[in-house]
Length: 123
Image (cartoon, rainbow, N blue to C red; front, top):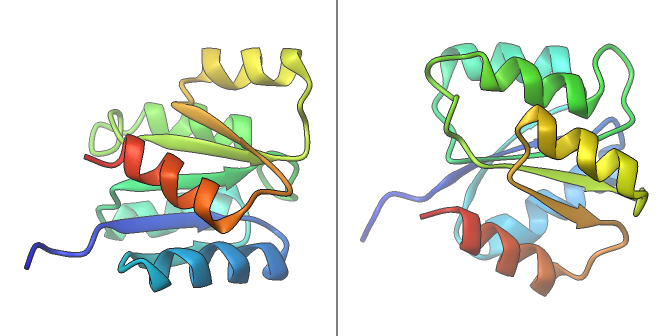
C-alpha cells in the first residue's frame, strides 16, 4: 500500500473546503486545509504536500499571490498547484499560469472532475 498523497485545500469558504476534503478523503487522499494564502504558507513550512488546490479570491492573500509565493519556496517549487475558481475569465487564467499554476478547476465542479484533475497532476 503506498502512502496516501497529501492535498492542501486553500479556500476562505468552509463549505468549499469541506466539499473538496470530503471528495478527496473518500478517494484515499490525506487533506490539510487553510482558509487563505497566509495560513497555507504556514502549513507548507511544516509539511510536504503533493498537490495544492487554491481559491483565487480570499482575504489576507489571494490565490495568485499564493502561487507565486509557493513557487519561490525551494521545497515546493515543483508542487502541482490547481486554481479553483468561478472565474472562467481568460485574463485570470493567464495570470494564474504566469504565476506558475499547473491547472484550473472552474466552480461549480463535480467530484469526479476534481478527482480526475488531481489524479492527473499528482504522480
